[in-house]
Length: 447
Image (cartoon, rainbow, N blue to C red):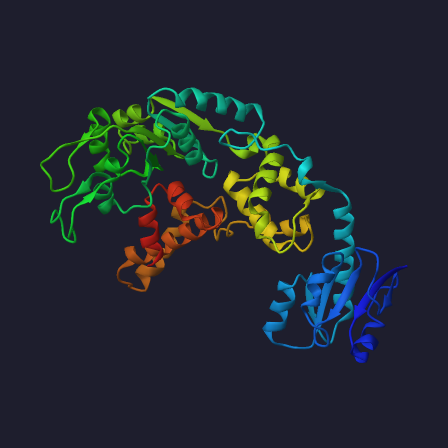
């Protein structure tokens, strides 16, 4: 029969607990000597700071009758596994004891961090054949002064690849300037890119160098280049052809020497066919290309990625993170990672922040992949017309005004809610899927 410890100076709490434990457990009021014990700790009669010492060897559950938030936060900061309130329900104790028991069983089958494959020196961590081929091509491209277009899904590490090309090239140590084509408003992008002279437009109270000038002798990286407005694509094409440009409001042509790298998760070939992206600019940017495969196609890279990110963020944990359980690793490998490496990195950071033991367990992965898009109000067999026509008829019968705006707003709201749910609130990805600028999406969301 396993013993569960209750540390308290309150006799009434001892009486309360005497009938709460499952039959296979017995209660002791002494601090256990062997490691791994379950301890219920009364923070109303004992100093919560003592929890910190106990959690080095045991799993501690704080108990309090206080309804304030301060004791809960304090006990959690000191490392308590859980905080429960009095009067304590029998079901609560049974649930926690069973949960802790399952957790301890999982931790017995752990993997020390030292046992995981070491992180390689290539820009993207991994040891799969796909990644090794990327590393080889990256090394070759870095030695040749050609524009490179990096493609791949969101979160695959395209900027890291571009930066690695720059660092391995003869331009190492020179500027590496990132132009996020989706983040800068269209009205400001030209000024940010080429710079401007004082008085060239309202608000230009002084002259400013553009990103292309700042990148002189180095590399300029056009991130999310598929979001570049058509009005600016022609001007960028001229720059790529001549390495010259005119700042806004200036008649003096500027000459620079920069290497151009770009990245996108959009189908630029399809955009060219649709007239959304200039074909001549596409060929200028894609002198050579490098495609980064999604994480679901190279799952053998997940263990070294876990090792890499745990090592990077372990210092943020309340306690030392010694390793991961095999169940944790298996669940990570079985997930499809629609957000790729960025999603995996954020999952590791969250697990480290939430872990209650020296090992990362499946307990910290309860929400992994659980979020699903909003259910559609119409069945799959219903066409858009079959939904809209009754709405139109109803509006006409009621003699509504501004019918177009009303329906347009309703459709927008439904579309945006569904897409944002699908992308887990990632507005950049939602805008890409919708084929609109992220700033346009943000503007519409305010309506």
